[in-house]
Image 1: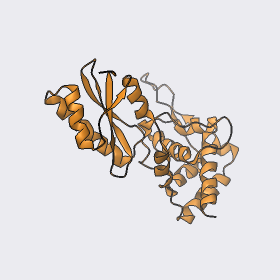
Image 2: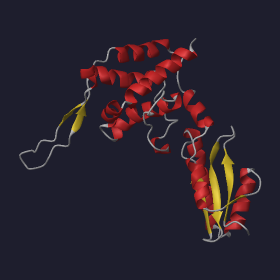
Image 3: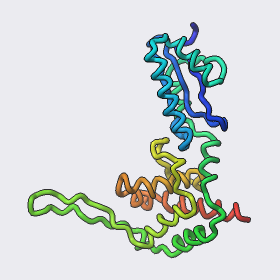
Image 4: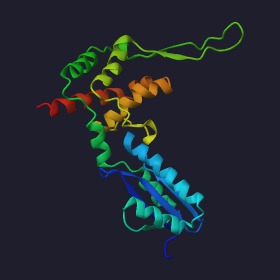
Length: 237
């Protein structure tokens, strides 16, 4: 066998790539690589395929036989050669146009009231509103230190709340899908990345306090809101 690794691509019924089953013949392993940027349905299918791979391994089939059997189930044709597992890992990290389109489809352009609320809330923000102050951090009488926590102004949190109304906060973007979006050094933030940023701010703040503060300081917050509003304005022309 010329290549030490072979893989098959697993797709959802709509053609979205869910992940890859791969075999390393040198190491004698058969494994599943979930594509990180998949949405809710793709992630669920990925869990099912992970279980199928585990089931085949439990049967004691050699990697080549297991991969061939799973290829028949996937209906994707024969395995593809790869120079190493890193090739499959790179494929699993890829973000596709289909991923972007899925996120853009979550935006509710028909809800004019929600978009107006986002525009009004953002326009009303002052420089002082953007400052996130921190409470806590004091040492209590028993010697323990109160964990610091962010204190957002009401106008700032009004903008964050408005992101839910326009559909920019969505479970279709999982925070573990890849690196957090960042403000581009020049030019406009891509709209799909603005949806990723909105989900990061609204959901990520609950997991890691200070996410909103960091986004405001880095400029990601402004880039995100502007990208969403500009996209909506273009969409409704």
